[in-house]
Length: 267
Image (tube, rainbow, N blue to C red):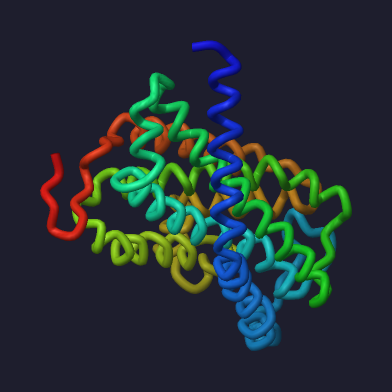
């Protein structure tokens, strides 16, 4: 296989993902409604209760909306990654992914390219959310919008690989949505997306340690620090390490006919 073959495949998968996204514009709106409700309604209720002190990467006291905005960026990617993993299962059994897996291109390349395609769509939604967040005075530095891009890509790859790993071992497709809920909500709530870890430590030390072992915490912190032009090597390192492990496990365990749909028996 030549480099041109890999490039054409990469462009084709990216284009197809954007075309699918364009044909499902309600998906774009629904992906933004959830974080905007948290930003406007939830933050308004907790603003007076949760005062945020001066903590890195912030240089002064901040509003609660400013604190949770990076966590809500992570939420967009988290939900989209799990939804994308579900669509990948359908594609694997009944659609284009089944055809792609028959091509001579390496399976890891196809899967990683698919994860990147889903990640690019999620990142586009994150940037639209950040622009809308300006309406509630969430104003990161201008260069922060560019500096946060690597963190968003890394987060989308990590969560996409997690979704793919879950999809790999789900035999009943109808159970996938239920399993996702057991992953999405604990990952989101047991992280630093909504509350600083020092507040979590004051409230419940054992919950604080659960948050410390949650990889989503480090993905959110990578987004938070990058958005405000600060470097957090620990957050980036752990997120990258977890991404590599999940990607290796997902690509190694991916089987074209593992999932059982509508009572059919997997091969």
